[in-house]
Amino acid sequence: MNPNYLNTQINEILENSSLMPPKHRDIYRLRTGMDDGRIKTFSEIAYIFDLSTSTTRIYYKKAEKKILAILSEKVSNHETIIIDVSDVVEKAKKLTPYLIQHLKNNEEDLRKLHWQVFEHLVAEFFASWGYEDVRIVGRNSQTGADIIAIHREDKSGVKIRYFIEVKRWKDHVGVEVIDRVIGSILAERSKFGWHLGMIVTVADFTVMQKYTPLQLSMLGIELRNGSDVRKWLQEYKFYKQGLWLPEPFLT
Image 1 (tube, rainbow, N blue to C red):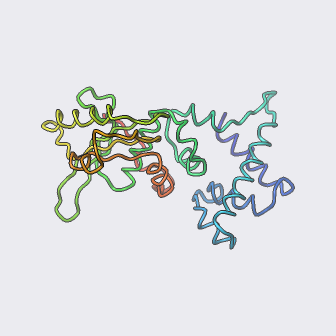
Image 2: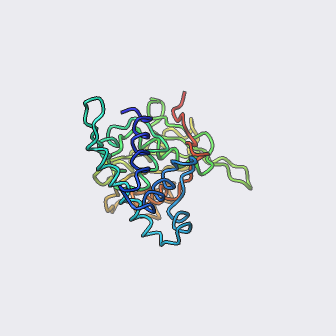
Image 3: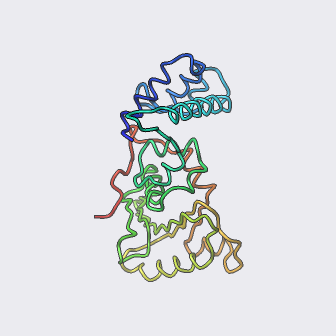
């Protein structure tokens, strides 16, 4: 569906005061940045309307649900418009600010992302934190990493090179993945200078007897699970309403 056409349809719904309470409509506009392009947080909107953050979220969800229900019934050019947000997320092949905003409001859809989009999302987080030279390198046969990221220590000036493995699995990640990452880091250290390895999953890790958290830390391996990813997502700030890393692939 043409995005401009969809925006026009949404605007027509919002301008019809009989379809939803004005406060729901205004909260939706502020949250999606429809008026000035600036996407406000739930906390900011709650302050404007003197509401609790939880109530603001509820009003936004009601407005979103109403809009989707109306759009699903509309007919344009003799074609019924069916809006299935989850289906759109699964088919998305590119990370966009709009997709990230949807994920902020619907964390459960993280598991529905295409694996390449999830890799880009993780790389986008690192870029937003100020890491240098963040790139997706999964297509590069010279390394087993999915993402590389370099962090410069402010005081010492030392550059810390991260080997990042990303798993958008619905099942738990097991010790075999950790063994593989450790092996790749050791084998590639002389060429890429890896200092730390990180494994990021939208799910979780199996309970391991082979490694304790301390042992993994001593080996330079950090594990980040779905709870960490959701925290990163909610704390993420857009770059001038766009992406920090619009072109993530190593060229």
